[in-house]
Image 1 (cartoon, rainbow, N blue to C red):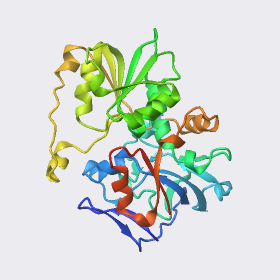
Image 2 (image 1 turned 90 degrees about the vertical axis):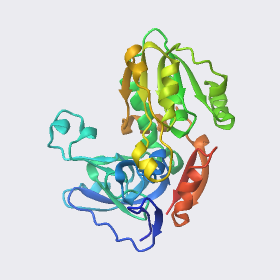
Image 3 (image 1 turned 90 degrees about the horizontal axis):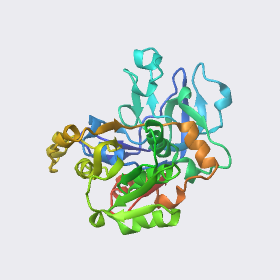
Image 4 (image 1 turned 180 degrees about the horizontal axis):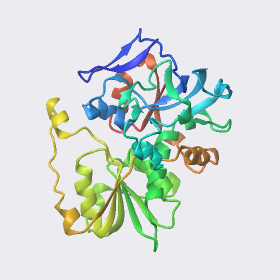
Length: 332
């Protein structure tokens, strides 16, 4: 079968003869019908996590086979799937923090082949059925929308705070839409007029970064820049004892330097001086994301910039990394 593979040297390629995966006990075989490129996929190509294997973790697909112990009712179902594959026995799992399982593998990110292939496997426990009124173009956004919704779960909203979403990329625009539903004054700050124009469509305040005074007057800043420099800017926006939510994951400086990219030093002293609350935020609630999509409370279709095919290979990633591009979707 075809698969988009990241080699150990950090170079993606199409493997036209990748071995067909076989579902083990508790797993299902999924045929993806739509896949989405995430910033994490691009960072993996720069050395993030030291990953090698089949890329991809954003998908909607159909269950075609199942392994021992799996309810056969999943066969033929259209599904989205959580990306953390867990043991269920460690202290984190038993404490209800399965996304932090000590022995987890992560779809297309750590220790497990991803979904950028004609077929892939995933534990049945990770599956969520997609309702008929959520088409593939929207269902493929379940994972990133869930990540945006996680921010809301982690914040305490009081006295109509001032919130800045820093970054006008895929995740930033999702976070802006989700946070705009709260009792808060929300704005999205970025560097691209064309991307920020979507905020105008949604009735969300927005500003170009160059037009914003860094006056340490924001109660909450959500860093969705996908860059090391985002943290520094966020700290210049936050008031003392404000809250910084970090959504950015990037390759560490040593990995980027090894590939000839410059690294950026970070001054963390403002966190101490201004007593900033820092929250790391990663995966989120899939069931809630599907419900939000089903009720059409968030616009994801407007984020689609390009449609491609799996056979386009590395060009899919190249397109996703171009300035001005939001979401690249592709099919097998």
